[in-house]
Image (tube, rainbow, N blue to C red; front, side, top):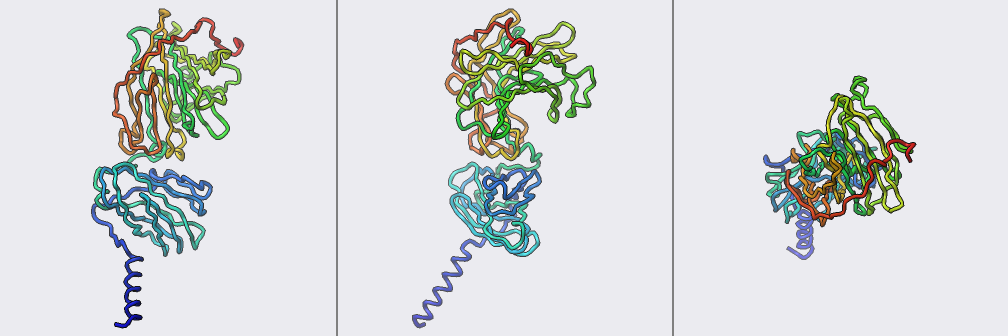
Length: 434
């Protein structure tokens, strides 16, 4: 064989092995991960939209679609896409530090090999999909990300057989405070959202009770709220279905506070104050639960911003009919209420919890029990944790981090011995008291 023929032979062999280095086929042990519930548009959000049903629109090349799943094993991970092309298109797939270019042709749904990556550490794996070019108006409709290989051996954690709306929101986490064995009327709590943790869609709930909750929200890029809600004793997700005798009644509200109804997660009375609270600052909440002696219970919430010159501001007072109770189930929680934001992490600190009994005595609460919601219990999302940080309790969720805390874990924070100085008889109970 002469030099030219030798060179041509080598070139052909190199071409074959460089263009088809990882011929992979789907085995019987492969796992199909639906795009719906496991995927977000993490960049170029105007160019694509992933709904609870999957990819509903993908026309622009700036969009990055990111999927997550959690592996328990290491080794080779084989990647495939199940997709329906719209003519000829080209995609870039990145995972575990490697990039692959995949070409899709035709108009029939098909399984397309992507490549192999090495997984060195168990935990969450992110797969990014970006459009390079397309022949039609839309990039391919991808229905599944298929994984195989030794790294994909069970257990693998991802969203399946679970409502995608809740899964996309991510797990909600709670800290439940141990109350003294006596009648409690007031609950005091301090809340600090660390800088950078105030993601849009976050609800940092400070003062929860058996029939409602109060805290701060990030509603959008320009609006933040202080929110206070009380559930009706009538169980429904549709406020208009509540009989008149079981509707929440307004007793009073603070200046500039909006009052209305809420539904979808039970129904009842809701109030909120649009307020530009800031990450890194500490805000104070006080809530009161007190029977009125007529078979109903009164609920009040007050809010205080940093600075000694600031005074307690009333959010609202509500009357819950057919209820006779003092303060029960004191707790805080952290949730994301916008599904498209569920890939972002968020955290919050709660400190210096106190209660005031019906006898006027204050008690510091230093013990908390960590719990989580149905999303975490179903193990479709494992990015949740909580515990103690210094003299505060903390909660964290979202973002597909690998740590998680066992449900019903008990934590004890360091006492502050800093009893709140509040003249409860001088607290405002309607806007005229300001």
